[in-house]
Image 1 (cartoon, helix red, strand yellow):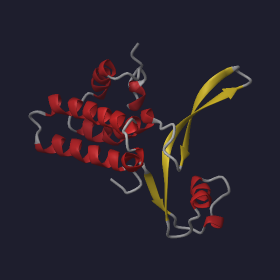
Image 2 (cartoon, helix red, strand yellow):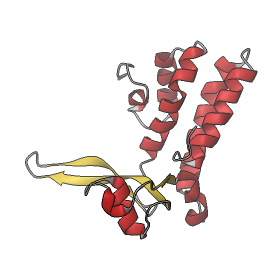
Image 3 (cartoon, helix red, strand yellow):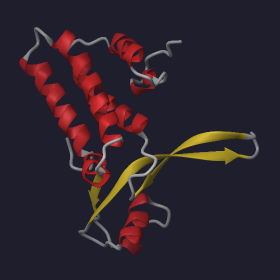
Image 4 (cartoon, one colour):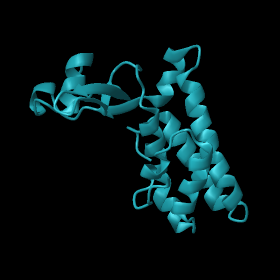
Length: 173
């Protein structure tokens, strides 16, 4: 798995894939438990006493391959380079965050996916979604019914939109 992914995703991806390959006889029981364990670990990280140390596990990173002025004006790379005072060859970082925005035309609040260089309002749903998206192919190759897995995860996870993690899985009410 490539470097920009957060350490939390890389760690759990590797652990789960190793389990898939090395222990095929127990994977049906162990894999759902490992995914739940990963989600629980994420919840612990987000509420940990020493957030600066723990949040490094959730940091996305990318090395800039252009000078900041060479990026299009509204790209993430340019904004991060400006915020962090970085340039070509430097490493930038960000966190996936969630922001509620009031939509005047609809007269309601709508949640939005954003990013920040500070670990505030973390989008834990997005991190869980990323891990499952990274695992999806491996799970299917090894014979997992991703729809059934999503239903199982839904029962034990407080997020009722877990099925959105696995594209093609119908909503379970």
